[in-house]
Length: 196
Image 1 (tube, one colour):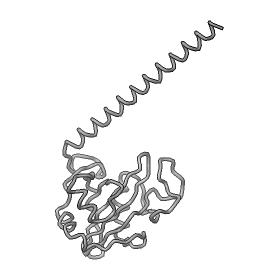
Image 2: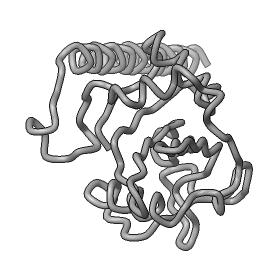
Image 3: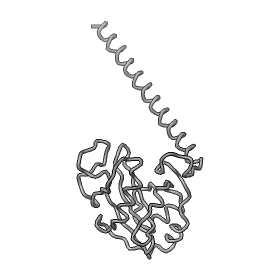
Image 4: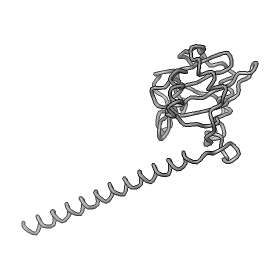
């Protein structure tokens, strides 16, 4: 009985040591990843430096910043059907390089199911709308982007006649889903900064 108790105690200590080592290693990995991200954010990148436009951090366009100074000029709605076809086309073209998706696909706000995780279900959109904000020259699409790490994003489009052009993309805090919130986030630098 004593030998069995000693063997169990040794096994328990070995399991505890392995668990503590794994925890320490995992924490080291997370800290290393955080340090890597901080270094990346500290280094400015420009469109010519990177192969994919979605990986590029650039200054927020001045006309977007100017428009956000008067957020009351934006009309905010909450339906995918409120996004004009020109913006849908520009959105699909902007994401095609990184996602290989060829058509615009987005679920309605609070709709379920959608591909919120990296377990992709065929036929379901990978994005879910949060809000659309439209002014005379700009369209802002606030949406959730599913995947390994779900994010809350905004894509900005400039309207020119019957065409729209993707000008900027950012990830945001989950509580930002309108022009006023975006203005506050940009002022507080609580957002990512990318050319879409």
